[in-house]
Structure formats: C-alpha cells, structure tokens
Amino acid sequence: MKSQDRYKQSLLLVALLAFAPVVLFGKVTGNISGTVRDAQGAVVPGVSVTAKNTQTGVVDKIQTDGAGFYNFPALPIGTYDVTFQKTGFKEYQETGVLINVDSARTVDAALVVGAEKEEVTVTATAAQVNTQTTQTGEVVAATEMENMPLNGRSYTDLLALQPGVVPIGVQMFGTLSPANSLNDGTLSMSGQRDVNNGFMVNGANTVEGDMGGTVIVPNLDSIAEFRIITSNAGAEYGNYSGGQINVATKSGTNQFHGSAFEFLQFGYGCAVLLLGEPRDLETEHVWRHLWRPHRPQQGLLLR
Image 1 (cartoon, rainbow, N blue to C red):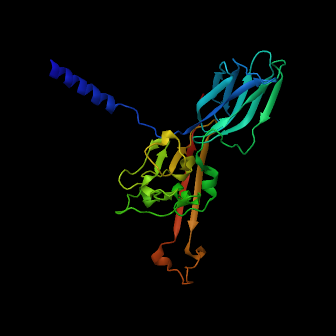
Image 2: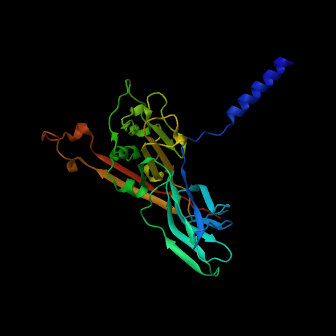
C-alpha cells in the first residue's frame, strides 16, 4: 500500500509541475497609489477611486482604507484618468497619468467640501518622477524606436545608448543568435558580465541559459515599449546581477491599428572607413531593403 501511495503522490507532483503556470520574473504592468485628504489635511476613508485607461476604456475601482490610502497594484501600460468621489465633497480628477512598464506613480488628492456635481480637474505633468523605487534606467517607447537609425531593426541595438552600458562581450565560446542573426544583447551593464543580464518579454524569461543574451527579439513594430534597468533592480528581477531588460508588446485598444514600413540602406550613403579607404560595396553587403505589407499590430478591443 505504501508503494502505491508513493506512486500516486509522484504522479500528482508530476501533474502539478506539468500544468503549473509560467513563472514571470518581471512586471509588465505599473501601479498607481496615493492618499486622499480633506482641506484640513485629515485623511478621508471610504473614497471611491476609479482609474480609467483612456486607450481602452477599461475602468478599475477601489476604495480608500481607514488611513485614506488606495493602491492599484497591476495596471496595464497606458494613460489613465484617476477620479475621486465621496458624498459631501467635490469630485476630484487627475488626467493624463502615464503608466510605463514596471512604473509606480503617486496620485494624492485633496478633496474640497461641496456639491458632488462640482468637479476639480488636474492635468498630470509630462515629467513624472518615480519616487517609490530606487531603480535606475530608462523606458524606451515605440516612437523612439521607430525614429532611431537601426541597422537590422532590433531593439537590443538601443541598449548601449544608456549610461553604464558597454558593448563588450566576454563569452568564451560565443552565443546562440536569435532569429535573423539579430543582436542578442550581450552587453556589460554597470560593470557586470554580459552573461549576468536578464531579458524578459511580457514578463517571461527569454535568457539563453548557456551563454547569456536573449533568444527572442520581437518585431520592432510589435513592441509597445521596453524598460532597461541598469542598477538597483527590484526583488522580482532575481537571479541576474547585471542589467534587466523588460519588453512589453502592444495590445488592443478601441481603435483599429495597422502598420507598413519600408527601409532602404545603400552603400552610397555610408561613411568612408576610418583611414579614408573606399568601401567595397559588394563584399560588405551594405545594400539592405526591408519591406512589410500593411498588417494589423493592434486589434480592436470589443467591450
């Protein structure tokens, strides 16, 4: 009987491991939190707080606790309007709150006594400093990626533009290149070895487990933004002591989106070599012509 019980327990353990969800190492969402007070500075509990994504129309609701505090822990990237409502106070709204990958925004509210039909609207400033974490790094949005000159259209070519990132590899036996032989991102960040960097796509680990770098480089047009953390990464990014790169792909909105692009790189527009020698256009293969037809990158979100 004991052997049968152990056999059943082993089968159960294997089944649990087989159907367990994929572990996400980094967040692709952000959070908005804050404290609600009245005109005298006292905290106001029981305030109804809503966060509306202006691109999708999705609304999240919560109430402040006894200390007047609220928190939306996992909001998809986008721009939000945050509204505060409580009987006896004017409605307070802050618009244009931008949420990036793994970002934390503080939106405090000061409610004023008055009729509920009256409204106080505040527009968030363009420069919103993250005061809730000590992470250092940068968020690179889709617009920046599209406007930067890239030889190969790989987001990993932009990593070396950040302070503390050095384009040097120390692998002894080389690395496994992603599809189309794109840059695998094996760079030294903040003095760490290139094999110590973490790469994630939508929170899933994409690190090449043997020699480092990433084995998945999404199409540039499918990336909404990516965050590169060069130091002081949070605990959710464990296992890697170097830089952390978290890519978030595009998702649906209430507007149908598509894209088409054409890039032409030819030898006559290239600079001469370091010593002024002419380029050998045939052997260098500097002619490049990339074209993609119109295809949807963001679908319609039906509600």
